[in-house]
Image (cartoon, rainbow, N blue to C red; front, side, top):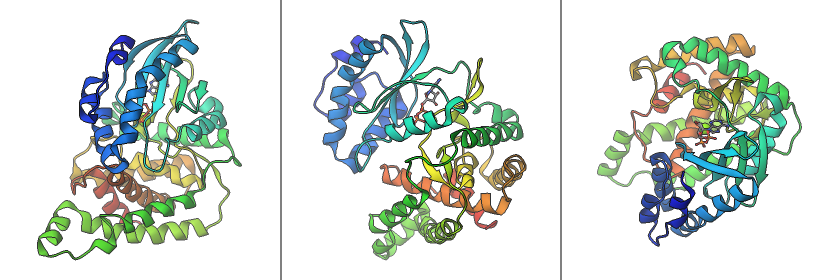
Length: 347
Ligand SMILES: Nc1ncnc2c1ncn2[C@@H]1O[C@H](COP(=O)(O)OP(=O)(O)O)[C@@H](O)[C@H]1O
Ligand SMILES: [Mg+2]
């Protein structure tokens, strides 16, 4: 990013502001989508302040800013430090219910230490983290060539992250996930809004919303059962998938972008079952890929496949609900609808 470009731009209309700022398409789309569920004011304020925030942090942390990188959650940009260190500046965009989980991300990164990317600086008021920049690509391309190998690397990353991070932090327990189900039920797509007439019913079937409602009810019960099973809690990554594991010359494979939870280790298997998106296999083959990934994971992390499938099911449903909450549309051909269907058979 050229600092001048982002600095000079001002606008009072959100779409215009988003279009004018030098932001990646993924972030622009998400910002506009989120603004509808958030209220435009928060998003407009964040965008209006962003150039100054970047400028201030760049000065304080001695950065020369580079290109903005694709992200749907945050302003993420390459930066070079005067010390010569290659960095990433990440500033979280507003989410519903307050600020992004920058503090959690920082806590989880610190807890995981060598298993995660190095956290160089943080300014939680600004929602900003300065991270060491990994040198290589993510697992996204590798899984197209060799999905088993990508899964093995993810499994090892999961074990290293969790064992380095250990137990006992002030990260939220997995029981907070129950809130997502409750909010969905109360919200515009939820069960209480059922039965608005034939046209709506057909539209709901067509979009997959009916299937998602059923899956949500099941996932809620499964989550309750899983939470009742008292296993020792560990620090969880919370979004462990192909794009969040990067090759690094010095550290081998390095993990970025933790959401930070505390709970059962198997929760971390969820996101890697329905990623990367676009999915590398045909939708007809999703079930085969999911089963294969579960078998490979189970071998490396030494957790029963049925337990991994149960957490994977909960995680896939939650991910769909979070996308809806974030202003996204439901699509019955979303790969997560297929992982949900495949995992349902295994639990
Ligand atoms: N430490 C890092 N080193 C290299 N690239 C990074 C680093 N952190 C983030 N990136 C790049 O920026 C992208 C978005 O950052 P990430 O933290 O994963 O946020 P999100 O997934 O919420 O958009 C990553 O997929 C990666 O390509
Ligand atoms: Mg990410």
